[in-house]
Length: 155
Image 1 (tube, rainbow, N blue to C red):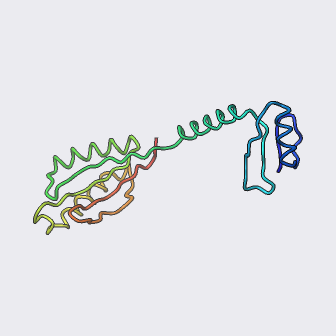
Image 2: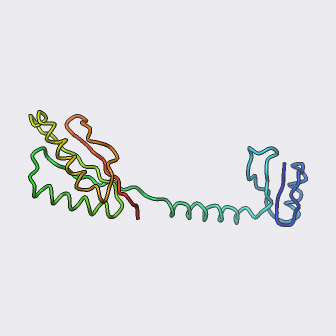
Image 3: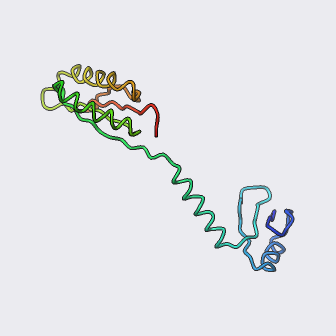
């Protein structure tokens, strides 16, 4: 196995010799990459090694982008005022960097007028085209016709 450390020249050692080197320095022998040929070990203080690993994980996690999905619900006969009100909210969500799931919920016999719902969603997408792009075109799933909008630039 290849052993690396601060006071050691990197070279291939036998497992017993590597453990003896680590013991002489009052440190631990830590397996870094077991799948390499030969496997790589490092002579370090194990507690310090774990601390630095956790610190790296935390840093990576803080840099991740969290995707938020906000829902906007319409009916097939949504009036212009309600449409404008919901559009204003959706535009705010897109400006914040959240995805928007707009859907039309059909109740009872209103499912007969699917085209009304599709026209409403396409009109909604057209009104939001300066802030977001359509990720999924209107699609009917049971009693719901859904459409996803993603923000153009994420903050």
